[in-house]
Image (cartoon, rainbow, N blue to C red; front, side, top):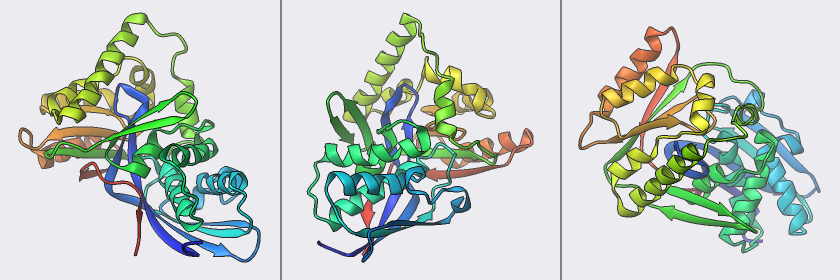
Length: 314
């Protein structure tokens, strides 16, 4: 055992980014959960939740993303003993910012470190994704990939996970719009329920082209390609009904010359990509706030960048 006590930061993330449903994600700089893991003498996995929205997050093992990750890692790696998981929420839950993934990622990363498991990137991602069952009902890996590895991530799954990561272009800024509204329990699962089961072939072709452009844009550090790729023809049209001011914000983003705008994860937050060389990010932030206010809605906004992955606090 390397350490018996470890504190980590699990960053927020934004998944899908328009055309990359369940495949694309980014880590968000300056927004994270703090996770403290302490090996205990008993055989229990104990969970305590503090911070933003902590009173609404279950501490039951099967209903907490971090707890479920720990349970699965202990079982499959034959770890005997107990561990205390303290979760200090900095990523607001239910807003489409990878709150559950921030916790799951840090717990998976931390247990791998404490018990010196030597897991591969694919194995680590698989354990972190398994925790998402507690919040979304399925083990989706997009958010946890962004949180663990940082940057822009692409996840592929066949018999196991493979991950590609890309650094962001230097002048790419992000504006998050986080509406002050109540969201239902198991919101991600409900947002998945509205996705159509049958999709026109032409829309599939458009999304494949856009997703390809997104990867090419990050690989070539070409922000114009990234912006084009944020248009989605399958998931966002179905989910737009769940996101306040979706159409108004899309129009504003186009009028202000941003690179692109998309629903962040399952919403209701929106994420705007901005080329700082061509647009005033502070002005865009101000106009987004004014749009919500004019429609009688509260909102929190944040100007930030694409960040790094899980980090260990010294």
